Image (cartoon, rainbow, N blue to C red; front, side, top):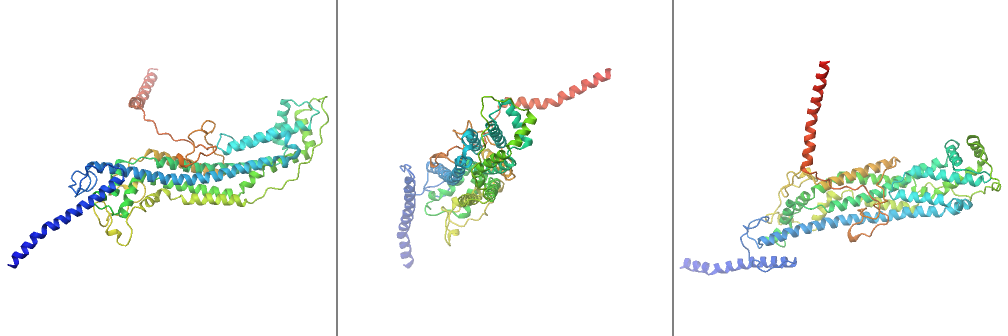
Length: 541
């Protein structure tokens, strides 16, 4: 009797438990439908409760709430979401670099403008007769700083030559000085040094200052350009599959509230961003070289050098005035006494130039603060590419004391067992989440690595005071130059500084390759034939 009662109770309660399990399944699929609708997809025809997952190609093939169409759409969404996050990270770095570029660039241009504005009060009566020469000098300095193809040493030499011609002609109006005679005068300046040691000292200081400033600003531009291009590199299909499995397969399994395990997320993103992580070495080298340039800018008071250009000019003119008679006598000995100009008046009396202060040897507080701010930002970006997976995983992984045992591990809820992969392409050979061919690096990123190397070498040359060549801005300044600024989030930068552009290598047609290959293979045969012919001819003789 007792056994019969128990059997009856079991039979009566079985439908109840079955109904409860069906309700749980229906509820989990209802959550998925709500999530799916929230992403903007049509939920018509979706399963009301879990179904067999044999049709799934990415997610685990257990019971699921996702159809094949849902899986495909969510996979595409995972790619779009991730590419958006990578671009946002890149855009954030670009904006940081752009802000520093604008601040530093406007400060340098302000220094140049302020220096030019002090020419008139510094030179007094000597300014107006020589205004054109002085204005041309500062125009060349601006062009050089902007990255134009200007030889700064030649520009400075040309300035002193033109200034000497004008001053000598103005001091000797009683003579008819032809262009040939003035050319002879300027040639004597190499040995007679009419301006004393000022041109040489000024050239050394001004050149070192402008080389460092131009290269430093170019480093910011290069960093932004590299970031823009690298952030736009498309994802591989293997990465898209891994991202789908990481992001939306929990939804298909009815685990909408379960977040991925931290190590699982890191392995997926380290695999997807393996090529980007290979930028790390050269990116650090670039940042390190820029920091050294920043220290050089502060230690040599380069802002004071720019502000002191009128002082150097004033000192040179004063030296010429004080030694005018001696210089004239030696010029006449070398070039001959010029023909007198009967209609001209006597030589005007040289007026002493206004007293000027010697240039300071310390960096101005405002300039030092600006350089420090830029240095802090550069220092903060040094690890950008290797910590990018950590930054992107930070807000999407499970956290808490029991997170490791209750997180999404790629197949179910539980602990993630594989170890964390290293950074870079070579370290992904055994990545359990993303299949990567480590022998096929992304060519766009390889090109940007080369750009970083080139820019770092320029910065190192600038540290040694060596001038560096940049692409001429005459044709590119209005176009698609600087990558510091991108999309609508960055305002267009005035006077962009272009960098050497990297173009995708063009694939040669197979026929061309075949021709070149055939030619290369035939070269040994041709050489051998010629050699045999020569030997035969010699034997006949």
